[in-house]
Image (cartoon, rainbow, N blue to C red):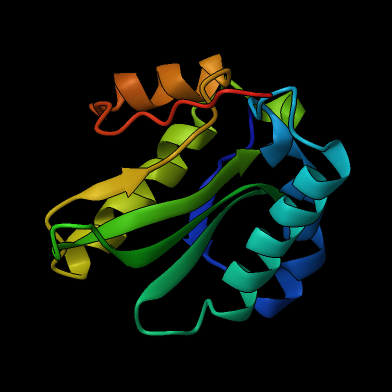
Length: 155
């Protein structure tokens, strides 16, 4: 893949199967005490909803493609903060396992950021699992800062 150019473009309906195939990777970093079956169902549902609503004016899905192969996906939407401000929001960012640390996540995040700017939004926000060290490092390198932290106590 190193000699093949990666292009980020808007999602097309014919990309659906390949994008859905990436959904299980969204389980990375989810707390170990969460029900694995429920997590798998949830992440598949997130991707499906994003794809189903990708044509909405306040949403977008971008894919990274090389040699006609989908290597990653990022989904974006408008999201109202509790202050009432509307930000851009990354719902999902996922890259194929064998394509990690090759700049694809960065390319997808740049597309998400450009989408948010084009929408006139002042910020782009996201959430990730506390244990997803690779994703947290990517976001930190990209200039993202922690804003909220959720704590959980298991009984």
